[in-house]
Image (tube, rainbow, N blue to C red; front, side):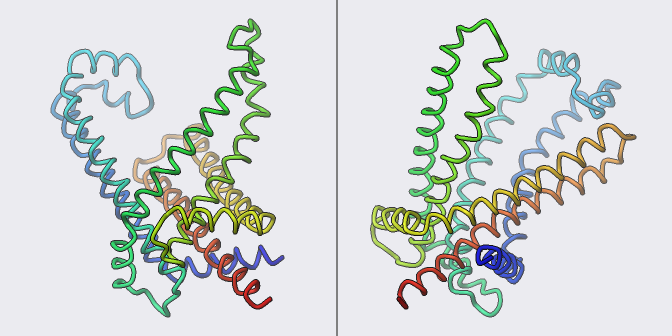
Length: 292
């Protein structure tokens, strides 16, 4: 019941500082437009008058795509390179914002404080950037380890029965989610430690977060699972609506666009609720432990 209250408080706090959501959404929308507009212009200039474009809009058309790439694919090279740079810049911006987001959730000003948000984003950027690199490496190691287990489980892909390849995922994928959840939690609480303790070395914050999670593992892990449940719920509803649009009559483009934007906002909201509720839980547990 305590965890449910923490989650409710996290949702309330998220809504109190909902401007953060629109800052993140604006960054994503800006990056998407910078990527999409050059592609749109190129398509219009080379295939805008082709009747095949109308068929492509209805769904994936391999024949059109193959013919188009054969004749005009070379023009996509600079667009692709530009898109990679934009995606990289976007990821850096998202990392930049983490310090401001968690500072707002930790200091809990009465109303939105833009000076606090942008100031702390700048102050903690370099630490958050390095921390992201370290945990990306950790996650790749975990994925590699489970990939190795998967390889051993199906005997190096030497089995003739293809069903073994797929049935192995039924137990290995849930196990991976359970294990990787710990490292995602560890990353989140390390960021919280960086904000709260202002340690000079990331190593110190990482160890503090590790000890905090182990000491309060049941509570912390349960809260994280609830947030994952919210994310799965959003993806499930999104899948339902997407399937409904595909099986029903062709919906107007703007309807499909609005629905996609709604679920993008929903996924961002779940991420912010996760950080908000984790910050609240940390402050609550530390207050109780200090009192004892």
